[in-house]
Image (cartoon, rainbow, N blue to C red; front, side):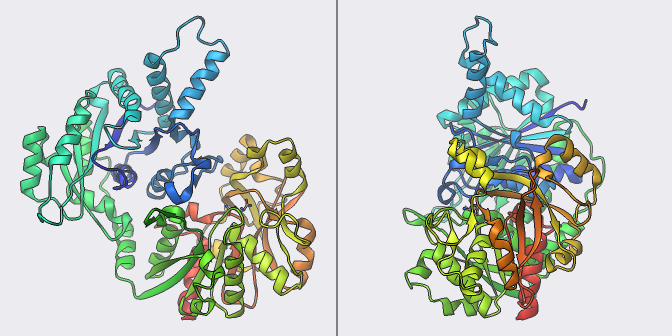
Length: 574
Ligand code: GLN
C-alpha cells in the first residue's frame, strides 16, 4: 500500500475566504505533477452531517455518489480533482463522538475509561487515514478558524498523526486574510501574525502561509511575515481576489507552489504539468464573445442584511463551466420567487433574460412563483432548465395549464390537492408511516435510461456522459444494487445524483404524455416502479427538466450535459 502523506490546511483571521478552493487547488497542482490526491473536510460542528443545515445560512448541501449530504467544500474538491469523493471524507465532531459512544455501548472498550485523549484524536486519525487509502496525498481541511475552541481536537489529532507518520510526511498550510482598511490604504499583516501565533500554541508551525487579500502581496509584506513568524518569504504565497475560482491553481503555480510543496516532502515532479486545456477554458470564460443573462428563481432568505448566493453554488459553477465551453459568460440574477407571487417582480421582465433556471427546493414557500415563471418561459419560448423541484414545478404547470387539471400540485405543497401529480410513491409512504423519515429521501447516484431520439440523449452523447464503463456499473451492481435498479439494458445509461423525496406520480404519466410532455429518461426501482428522471418538450427551443441534480457532476473541462445544452440553446436563440 502507498505510504500516506498529509497536507493539513487550517484557516486564520476569518472564515469564508476560500480555504476549500485553496485545498482543492493544491490537490489539482499535485495531480498535474503526476501524483494522486484526495481531500478530507473536517467540520467541527456536532451535527452528524450537513443534511439538516439551512442552505441560506451555510450554503448548499453537497450530495455524494454514495448518498452523503455534506459540506459544499467537498464540491470544490470534486470539481478540481475530477474524482468522486465519498461521504466518509467529511468528518464532523458529531460523527466522531457518535462512533465512540456506539462502540462504548457495545462494550468494545473492555473496562477502559473512554476519554477525550486518546480516544477522540485516535478516531479522527483513523478516519483521515481511511479516507486517504490508495492516494499519494491526503489534503485535510480543518473547518473554522484557528483559535476556535472546537478546532482543538483536530489540531491535536494532526500533531498526533505527525508523531505517527513523521514530520517529513506531513506539512501544514495556514490560509490567512490580510485586510486593507479603507482609512489607511495599507495592507495589514498583524492578524496573520496573530493567527500564526495561535496555531503555534497548538504546537503547529506552518510550512506555508497562503495570504488571501484583495490585492497581491508585495515583497515588503512577505518579508515582514518572514521576520515576525520565522517563515521563509518563499513560502509566503500571495492569493489575491480573482474573477474565476478555477484560476486559483494557476495563480499558486505562478509562485511555484507545487514544486515547493513537493520539495518539502523531499519529492520531485513525476511529470511536467500541462495546464493548456484548463488555461484555455478560463481564457474563454474571462474573455467571452457573448454575455448571457439567466434568471435563477429560488428561495433566498436574508441573513440580517446579507443574502447568501452560496445556496445554489454548484448551479452557479455548472453555468459558468457550460459558459466556458461556448465562450460565454453567464450573469445570474437571483430572483426570489416570493417576489413574483407578491407582484414585486413582473413576469414580463423575464423576457429580458436569455434563460430561466428553477433550482431544487423544499416546502411551500415560493412554489407558485416558480410555477408561473415556468408558464411564462414555456409560452414565450424562453430556454428553461428545471432541476429537481424545478422538474416537479414544470409537471404541475403542464398539468394545470395544458392538461386542464385545475389545482394540480405536489402533495408536498398542497396535501389536499385533487390532482397530486407529484406525490410520495406508496413504498415511501410506508416508511413515513413507520416514521423512518430520513430513509424516505432518494439520496446519491441513481441510474436512468434515456429515450432514443430525445434531446436529452443527444446532449449526453455530445458531452460524452453516457456510461460506457461496464466496470462502474458492475461495481454498483455488487455494492449498491438499488442505485442501478432494474436495468433492462446497458444502452443509454446515465448516472446522476439525487436529493429529494417526491416523484412524478405514476398514474399521471400517461395523461401528461398524451398532452405532449415527453418523459425522456426513467429509473426503474428494484420493485419495478418507474420513476421519471427527465422531461422535455419537442416544440420548444429548450424546455428540459430533471429530477436529478446534474450540477453536482459538472467540471470546467467536462460541463454537465443539460447545462451545456441550456447555454447552447440560449446562444442559438439570441
Ligand atoms: N422538495 C422536493 C422533494 O423532496 C424537491 C427536492 C429538491 O429539489 N432537492 O422531492
